[in-house]
Length: 180
Image 1: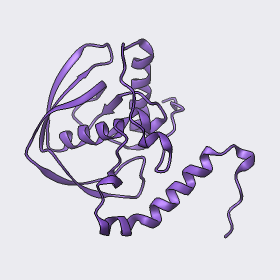
Image 2: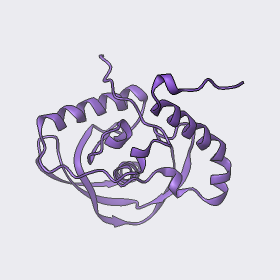
Image 3: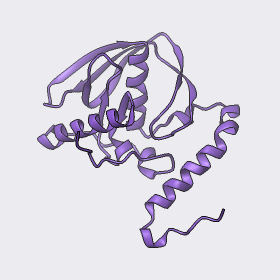
Image 4: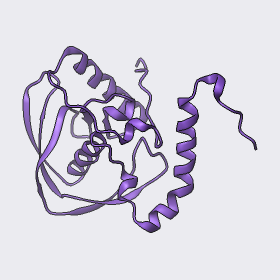
């Protein structure tokens, strides 16, 4: 399998905190991007990936929890029901997990990779993943759900990720060697 060239952005990268732009018209470029995102998700062992996580500021997500691949454009939750709490991880916040409360059942409206409108119902893990990826499109990360104690627990890891993100955004010649 050929690598996609898409790079997962990590905590500290500014694009992860920006609201992604709606797609006005789904084109072949969007379909190709969704396919590349799916490949990147599978390569990294994820079950969901939003476009901002690979540096693309558009409302695109891919999800596969083992029940088939979803490629969605402009997804939004139109109905929520019940509540569940799950321990969540994130490709953009590696080695960090946070218990997040989300709706147990949801209805999602979106378009597929051809621009065809879809309405999907999800519950349990699938509902959680849809909400997690849609959060990315709105500039929200799992760390934004962290309790005070969780923030203390993960502070060092977040500082390391932010420093790594800052280093990777600099031109190669400006990266300073780290002191040991």
